[in-house]
Image: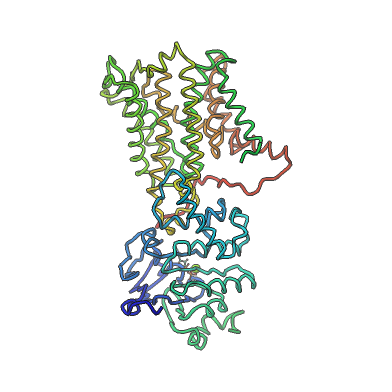
Length: 261
Length: 343
Ligand SMILES: Nc1ncnc2c1ncn2[C@@H]1O[C@H](COP(=O)(O)OP(=O)(O)O)[C@@H](O)[C@H]1O
Ligand SMILES: [Mg+2]
């Protein structure tokens, strides 16, 4: 972070103002302001239906906002399509895996690498260019612990491996901002530890926004936490402040198996 | 790379048979049935490519093939009562026919690219109806009588006199189309297309222009279909609106489904089956006029027994023979319903 200019430190990488999203009469997200700094690790918490995924979809462009603006890297991206935001440097995963089950791990990562480069319509294989992208795919597979499954069909991977692949795909474009929607959901205890290590090992220059139900994962990885409820942001603070916050306890930590955090 | 698999053996065997066919079957078979099988197979292959790799079941392939055929007809004939009578060299006709068919295909693709499933099917059906009516009504380019006396290039000669020449030209074209489609599937363009087929939303957030990709794929499939159209008018010497009517459109869909919508080989398997059944059913007086009832019944039977068509039956037979149950298939079943609403 030492080489980041003052202007960049002052300017958040992502700035949301007054973001709202309605589905018919339902306010899935309302009036959200959010600033995320360069290199920050932000966790978004909140009960099911709080609007976390919808907020991600609005940021990535998968759904348009009903109101408000989204600035990314100082540029208003509110009306840009998802592909343009990807090219500016957003990478994301989905709560429900969206890798290509009928293709190999290699081809999935290859497509993720190619996505933000030119040559989508090239109808011939070029040894050098494609070889370079496949080398990059191999590196990514190794980095997320799938080096040994490189040639396997994704449909034959375990759930945990598919989640690892998603992280690899989100990283493939070297994004400035990476958004992970519940990357630990459905993972075993051991797999969650491995995933936490993977997230902690990410290049510190990458900004990370993480939706996560698992407090062990979220509070270890995050340096700031945003709590959502009923479409609104209700609390924002450091992990310690969140642990100490009464509202959070009432809404979230106080219930069920996370009360020991 | 050069493992001997049953697929390869059958494939090479079929190719060898196709090459020596003129020496072992009658000239009627070569001229009437096998040549027709080859160009219908090319059109069906364009449909199978779009459906297997792009998830788009198009009913416009015959319209595009007809556009290429009508352009060739208008460009290369002289002395028709209707049409442009340009009298060009047949090779210029080929270039013009393919170029215009691809251009129209890109336009068709651009308009349909936002739709999926049944909506895509309906839009492409509309194209086929529009093409049929346009050529029927615009007498400057055709009219109901169509264009006659369309010549093949000099090297191929008069088709009635040299049936084998056109047959071999069609065979080479079909083989090249097959190799091209297989090759393209593994290129960045083809892999991207398969990604768009499986999950357009994911592809968009990876940086891809989903609609443009669908459009270009449609244009590419139009290129393939137009090759079939050129061969058709050389073979037939004549094209009229009935050559591309709803019946012809459905025939190609039937060929693709009977052969197998998941594999390119299915195009020619289905086409061979179709032309043989068509030919021999005409000789049975009870069935002759009811050919479409017969082929419809076969269609239904095959859809029920083997969604992968005849090629699918072959694959299943292989599985049974080797006692293996296949790994999860690398072909995603084709979605006919809307995949997911785009907000
Ligand atoms: N595409 C959609 N159409 C209609 N309602 C939606 C859609 N997406 C989300 N919602 C609704 O918005 C609310 C917030 O959902 P979501 O953002 O998925 O919450 P979270 O990720 O916090 O669990 C839920 O009530 C959900 O049913
Ligand atoms: Mg969610």
